[in-house]
Length: 388
Image (cartoon, rainbow, N blue to C red; front, side, top):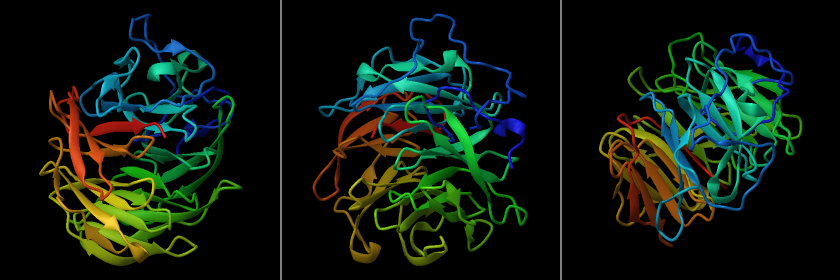
C-alpha cells in the first residue's frame, strides 16, 4: 500500500489527476506534505471557494513534463475554443492528472512527484476555478492517474512508482471531502518492471482497468455500493517490447486498449477476467483512447504520426473503420476527450499554435476540424480533463 500518505482527509476537495491523474483519507496525515498551494494573489489565481456546480461545458489542459504550472481552460462551444473565465490559472505546482465528478461539482488535480499532493476545486460560472480548503492539499500521494466513478461516489487513484496499487476514496457529494475506502494491489507487480499510466472506470461502474505500459494492464471488478474492488486480473503483453498505454470501456462492459499491438477489444467476466476478442489497426504510437458517451464509436490517438484512428462499434463490439479515418490530429497527440454533449472531440498534443484541436463529430463518427489553440507546452505528455 502507498506509504503513510493514506491518512484521513478532513479537507474539502475537488479535482483530478492521476491524469489524468488522481489521495488520502479522513483526517489528513501531513507527513511529507511539504508544499501547500500558494498563488500569492496573482490575477490569474483561482479564488477561494467551498462549494460549486456548473452546467457549463469546459475542458482544461496542461502539460506534466515541461514544468508548466499553468492550467488552460476552454469552452468548446459553437465550434470554437473560447478561454474560460480567468484562464490560464496559475497552480504553482506541476499537474500530473485531472479528474472531474460527473456532476461537475468538484475537480481534482494532482501535482507531480516533487510534491505529490492532490488539490480540490469547484468549477463555477464561465469555468472559473475556486480552490478548496484554503489551498491545503486534500491528499498527499504520488499520483499517475485518477478517475471518478459514474455515480460520483468514488475516486480511483493509480499510484505512481514505487507504490503498486490503486487506492479508492469515497467523495462527499456536498463538501468534496475524501475518505479512504479500500485499495487493490496490482497483479504481476513483482514479476517485472511496469509503468503506471492510467486508470479508467467502466460506465457501468462495475469494472476498472489500469494501463501499465510494457507491464500490460490490470482489470478488476468493483462494488459501487461498498466501494470494495475485486482481485486484479492481468493482461500480459506478448513480449517485452509490447505495451498497453491507455484503455476505455463501453456501456456493455467491453474493454478497449491502445498500445503497441494496436486497438484491442476484450470481453470481461463478472469477476473482471479479460479475454481478447479481436485486434484492429491503428496509426503509429497508439497512446490514448476514447469511447464516446453513446458507445457507438471508439477513437485512438496515435502519438508518433499525429493522427486519430476511428472505428464504429457494432454488435458484440465488432468494429468498422469510420470513413475518412485516420484523421489528422495535433502533433504528438496524447490525450482525447469529448465535450458534455458529445458533439465535439478535443485532442491535445504539442504545437505552439495548434496543440489543442476541436473536432465536430458527425452522425457517422467522422471528425471535422473546427478550431485550434496553442498547447503552450514543449513535450507530448498532456494532462486533459473535461466536464460531463
